[in-house]
Image (cartoon, rainbow, N blue to C red; front, side, top):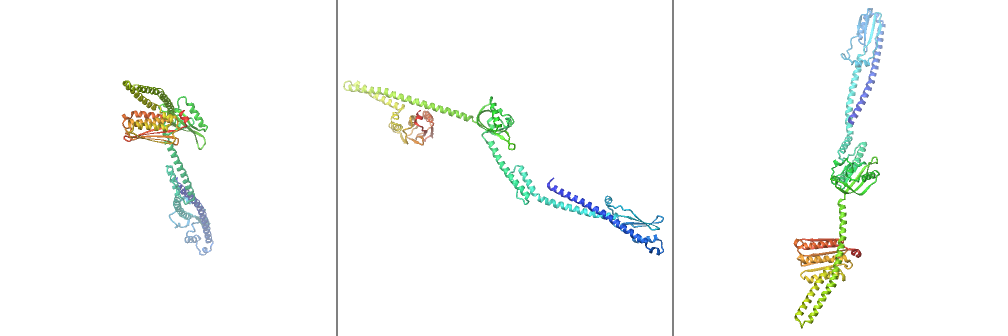
Length: 575
């Protein structure tokens, strides 16, 4: 039942109770009034009849007293709701009051009559010649009381209706804020947390409205935060799992589905040991014990099983889930991140670093071997060729006049020896440039450029050297020299270019090397396979020094080779 109807019912009940109390008072008053009226009327009637019976005028007239009395009673009629009967000495009725004409044909209800009737006894006067009986007749008085009561009841009924209608309208108007509050609460129940109530004129309702709006603000903020948290949880790339203190899973986000292969409907309610490899159950128990002790587990590297039975390397973190009402631990929040690729990358990085060390070692041994071979060629073969040339020149000088045929052969020996000498020195420069050991990187590079210009005058080699290049160390020096040597060789043999620009600069602890040509680029595979193989060796050299190596090329636009080598102390580089 609505509050409006309850208020109307209460008011109606109060009016009815008031009416019943009023009717009870009125009925009691009516009963008393009727009794007093009947008693007073009876007394008057008796006094009147007594006076008449004692009067002397009846006797002086010489007539019979009963006859005179009848005449008097006929002229008197009824006396205030009393019936008068005259009986003769023989008991016959000589006179009886005529029936009342007041409200004739109507009577009060019997139950009402029984409620207010007086029940007075009849009164009798002896006349000597008979008797007069006076009987009280309160039916008309009771009828009057009933009519008055009916009017009062109609008045009260009308008042009840009017009061109920007025109260219903006033209460409805007064409770309009309550309906607005109820509508607002219904909107909140349906999830419309932006609902707000206006200000109300009634102070109590206005207090409720302000409280409601404050609650709505808090709920909207909390709902928005929960939505953001739910969005974070659902869109997180990490698997987020909630389990109880027994290890049974109660929440499983989409990332966990993708990581382990179990849909949420299949895994929720099951034990987390389902994801644990054989022999690792003790770890799960230890984690649960830590959660029960309110301890946090951070970045634990462990392994878990997927639905397909594959092992995953995961990084596990866990924190206790605490009930805010009871401040008791009710479970744990576990996040897992797949670090399989990271572990593989770490292993690959370790392997790469090992390969770089091996490459540096191989390059060092290779350069040492080249240096040894170059030294052997210079010291042994070079001296032998020089001796052959000297002997040939001596023979030619001795036989110039006497033995022309021998002289010609000796001249041929000198020429072949010279050619062999030039070839040997070219091989020595390829194996190990002597200028690099004796003069330094700058002079060795300039000598290399000059030798190219002499041998290939159709190709212009421009070289720009910036910064101090004297203390780079043996490993960096030979790497830069071989890099430039291989790049210019590729330009001469494969690029079909007429210009090559070289820039070597020492900047901010890094040696930047750039070789650019205007050739045909790397578009034609058959022309550059050998070049690519040489560049692969260069990449290994540069990356072996923890540097960066890149090649840029477009067909018809030439090739740009860039190398960036971090500079370290000489002792560390040459170690």
